[in-house]
Length: 203
Image 1 (cartoon, rainbow, N blue to C red):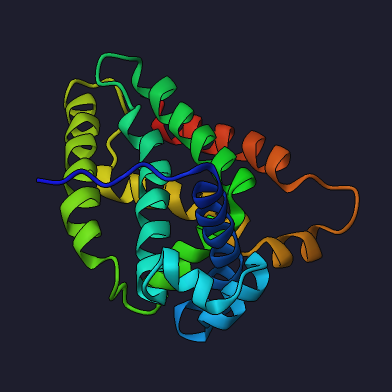
Image 2: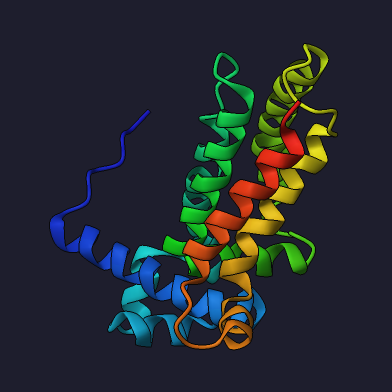
């Protein structure tokens, strides 16, 4: 089996520029609305040059989604079965909120894909996301059975954390319009969500 040659510095730089440009275009226009011409223009490359690095719009999108899933799932992977249940779940909430603050375009990219029926990431959802969620749901269920957490459906707890944290990235404009000037949505959300989940989960 022949190994792929490592990329040169300029190849690496151009690949990163394409992915950064594609993230911006996809997060704004969605997969269907995005074009290779838009991505190439934003990356400062010609379309033929872009196609030297990625053969299609689908290939660019697939690489973005693969990187995004790793970043998005790492906080859930960090949930430690040996830790204090409430502290572990609150830590997960904080990590997810930080991701929404620091990677809003990635959150919108993922949301756009799911809203379209997830045609390009269904295999990843079934092959990577589901087993991880099943594993962590079992950890939460065990904590409940041991009397260390208030009775709660583990899957819907995880879903609620996704909803209450990613909302601040996906609906950033709406959140800031409603709160008005002088507010930091993420700081305020952090304090609110800490209180919400602590009270809900305490035995």
